[in-house]
Image (cartoon, rainbow, N blue to C red):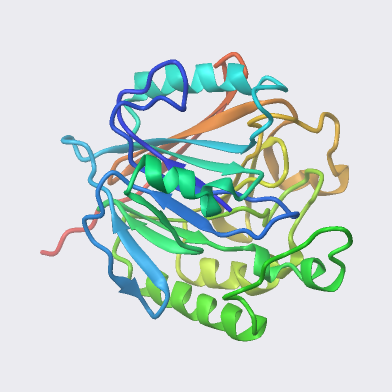
Length: 311
């Protein structure tokens, strides 16, 4: 699952946002992954195609949007998780972020009745679309794509309610995603899923996503694919695709030295420690920065988008 948590004016801890608008997607091979959204106000809840629920979030007064991305955390503060949270609070306040995109390793946020009682705005969905005026975020449930979860579950137990029959579920999801991307007029199109698509980390590429999802993203001019799953920070860009592949999975336990050297030719940045990522967007510019556990900037990516006006 993956998650977006948000709110301007963070304190030192990412769990303490003054005005929270949260959307959450967590993921782990051992659990049934879906999308959980926690939003301050549901301004619009329509449908894209038949399945993708639409949520809305306003940009700032100057027309910009900023958010953090943190992945694969949930170890009760260990493995530098607390230190990462402190730095996220510092950077989040500096950038005046709108929300946080995150991945965690359990389904508490999806199933716990306690969270619903804490805030009635809590809602749960497998996949959804977040419209922010200048950017559209397509949150996709990637777990049902992975064959081994069905064919070789080993000691894991999965709850596939709402997913079986699998082929029908995936077919509908891909159709809805393709339609949503095709009709989108957003300046930036960003797709978010838990599993890797391009990666040189521990899990490497998820072949099912490369075969089924990537062609749709490329055909519809998607700018970024953001994911967790591999416990590292990573930026991959290829001449074959305009998409920036961004992995932010360094929220807690990292896998130091676990890298596939054979695929490093497409790698722009790789860090095998803890950390997180920030994204700042305007109609014409995007800036992505990766940070380490001390809040130091490790890698910076800048993208531009030309504005066209009718004559």
